Image 1: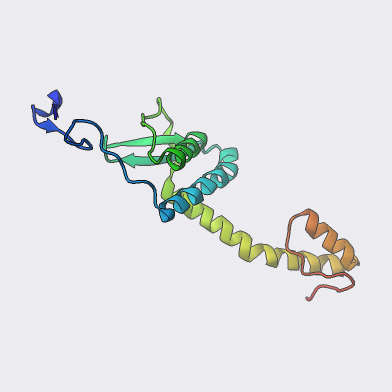
Image 2 (image 1 turned 180 degrees about the horizontal axis):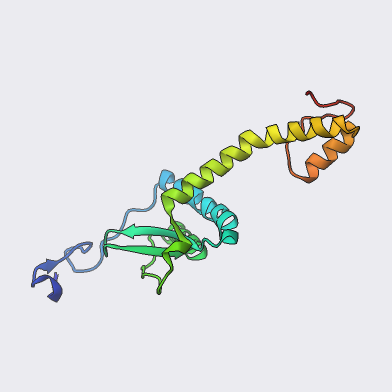
Length: 166
C-alpha cells in the first residue's frame, strides 16, 4: 500500500491488490459488450445529428474527480472502442477550456435520439402518405410517386399501378 500525501497519510489502496499493483478487472460480459456497441452506434448517430448544429459532444459527471468531463463525439467513440477492445476505458483528463454551451448531457442526447428515431419511424409513413395523396391529386402516376419516395428514402406504400389511399 502507498500513502497519499494529500489525504493526511491515510492508506490509498483503491483499485490495488495486495502486491500494490492495479487489480485486474473482469472481462466484459455479453450484455455489457452489446450495450457498449449500441452506445457506439448512438454516438455516431448523435454526431451526425448534432454536430451540424454546433454541439461538439456530451458532458459526463465524473465521481472520481468530482468534475464534469466534456467529450467530443470522436473522443467518446474512441473511448468506447477502446473499452470494447481492451476491456477498460482509457485514462481520462478534462477537456481544455470547453464551452459548456457546446455540449449536452448524455441523458439529454439519448432522449433526443430516441425522439428523433421514433419520429422517423412513426411520422415518416404519415408524411409519405400525405405526399402521395397530394401528388396523386395533381395528376402524378403511382410509379412516379413511388420513384420520388424511394429517392427521398421515404416509405413507399404505393405499388405499381396502385393509387394512394386518401
